[in-house]
Amino acid sequence: FAKLPSDHPSKSDSVQLEATRSGVASMVRALMQNDVKATGLKSLQGQMWKAGYDEGKIKGHIYPDMVPTFQWCQKNNVKVCIYSSGSIQAQKLLFGNSIEGNLLPYITGGHYDTTSGNKKQAPSYQTIAQSMGVPPSAITFVSDSEAELVAARQAGIGHAVMSIRPGNVPITSVGKEFPVVHSLLQLCGH
Image (cartoon, rainbow, N blue to C red; front, side, top):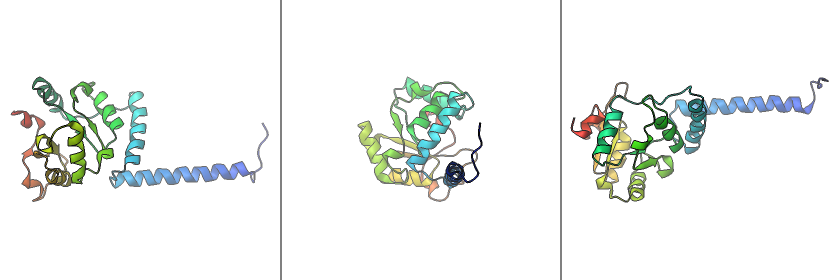
């Protein structure tokens, strides 16, 4: 093959393309490091995770109390929904490829993400309740985020519950306003 001269336009295009790729990668890393909850970012993360799950390189982490809690909910006809800043696709990948196997059959009430609204704003919880066909007062919402629990309470969510796990940000006086669980099994009376 003949070599292209160093001043060939395609050479500068490839340098510019590499600089653009590098800039985009830096921006994505910055968004992730700052925990930005942008729908587009979450969609991109979901696509990357899909490749990892499809190749068997990733398994979804779940806490040990998750499966028994799901089983209790199933036995007692309690609908389980997931509302996450992660995309619905990412949620399904995580729960479908968890360290405990496919848990998607337990999630009977649906998946919700930032397309339902910002988790720190009350209208998103009202949107989800409407989508579920229940009044907000009929919902139990568990989170480790004080701001999310405040928004849920403002939306009229019946039971907003603080989940405390190892490694969580310490709760403030705001978090102490909510019932606290250290295991989801406490929601089941255990």
